[in-house]
Length: 315
Image 1 (tube, rainbow, N blue to C red):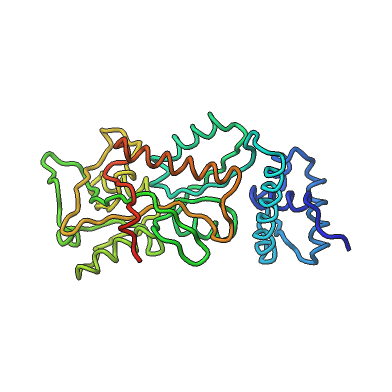
Image 2 (image 1 turned 30 degrees about the horizontal axis):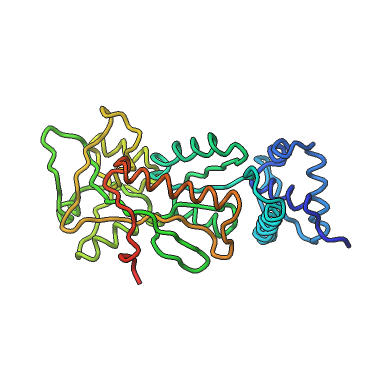
């Protein structure tokens, strides 16, 4: 039996990326029956069902997830080989980018503006979600790049530290809000926080635990807009970075009070799969992401954030 063809592999990857045969066919500019036939031939060749068809679209089976990781690697290597032999030229290709919601509020617009203006051959695909889920998507090869709350590499993940941002108490604005509040005082306040699987929650809980304190969480809320509304209403407070309030009208902004004794900071790093060195469009977009984040910090637009100092990284 003949091996899979590049066409079959590209069609399968598109189906997984788009989650729909019809949308994948439209993206590839082919008829849906032709796409379905190619994927069926691929499944016959591999003797495995790769996609589960549902009323809402398609999703990869366990075998499909395994093959998808290999397929993305194959396509990336083919595209890199072509670029290497054809020499410099327009950068063309899709790049899947993951951003946590609080980061997306400040970074997504200027980043996409630069890509679409200066590199029309690049098709950015932006995923906005919880950082833990973005990490999973990198492992599954659904994302080439993501900003995660990390400052050092780990198993299967390469991390380029970029910045650290301070966390604040976010609460209803008053006429005489204090400039600072101690961590011990924060511990007694009712809070809404992301669920325990969220990196922000585990990071804040660890910071309080180091001081012998615990949080008073009255609700788990995995939605940044909802957390902001609750904090602004005075129903409960939240703990967020300044970037988490980016884009809000001044009249709708809650108060932000600096937490001290001690302060709490979190790192942000550019992350990608350790076994997938960046090349082509992904490498270019990675450079643009780092440059844009540095510009936002240096201009003061990323409030209270500082650029990462490699000498300060944990061993």
